[in-house]
Length: 185
Image (tube, rainbow, N blue to C red; front, side, top):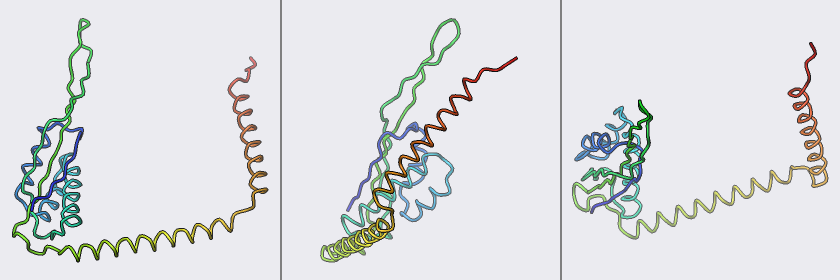
């Protein structure tokens, strides 16, 4: 089964992005991530994020095993070109093309169906994640209520705001006085 992920409008020329794409093509996912970590090209960090995204797509949407995946294909195409001008001698202008690229990464399984999760297992995991998320939200709500109970009442807040506004006005006046002060000679 093939899994894809796409990255659009990355501000690196396609010619430079293809160097990293050729390096990774045909490798296992873990090897490719290791290679991208070591590589010093600017594209490698973007490619690593894209590869992680494709792996997550495969695991969450189709129940694929990360250890059974490899980089099947990486297509690097040209995105929109930003056109800029550089002034030259004798009133001329030179054209500068700032190129962008689109990267489409495709993963495939080495051995078809190996380590793949069934639909029931995927549904169980999804339910468990939702329950965990609900628990976290409830805990956050309880913490928020506890912090709001410790805050001062509304009347104290209003007095505090007035004090803050007065101090801001005072500092603004002093600031203006410092700038526009006349100097004696």
